[in-house]
Image (cartoon, rainbow, N blue to C red):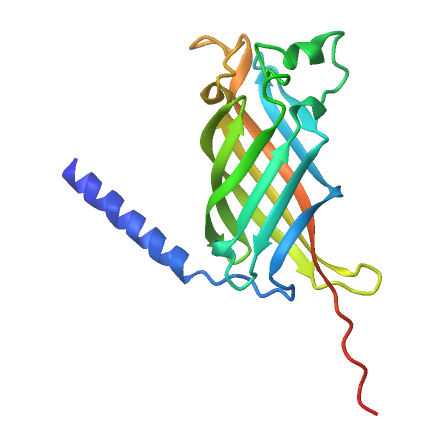
Length: 218
């Protein structure tokens, strides 16, 4: 057991050293505060249904702000809000959406907003990071980590006069941690709705306004 602990500590130390050596990808965008472009963003999630399929749904109303210096991405700060009442389902049975907004699930009248506030950003590759933050859902707050990939960006141009950056993210959480354990299958069965919820995010952010280069001297 002692040897296992020593090996585990050594492995963690090596991983930490490797993470410290990762240099962020060079990108020509200014540092500053970026706001979500809702026309180019999506937030969906999946949860196992009876062991037969991964039921998929999405939220249509959410917002986010990102403060970032591309040269120091681990110092970035992300905040986000989600309106649970914007939940969209594929062909829901009559009354099902109202049920999800009720006491056994989101309790949207009592908790009309979900929030996320980042607490740590750790590079895992030159264009990827693990972002950990405090998620408040159903009135309860717990840490959640999502893996984020930087898709690119530019400083802006005449047709799109603000800097733009884009990301893809994915992660998971246990809904029972947030007091939403209704319908979780009994141990050893799949008769119900799974506890683990996986989510996927696509997001573009717009930032500081592009400045045209000065005209060459005559």
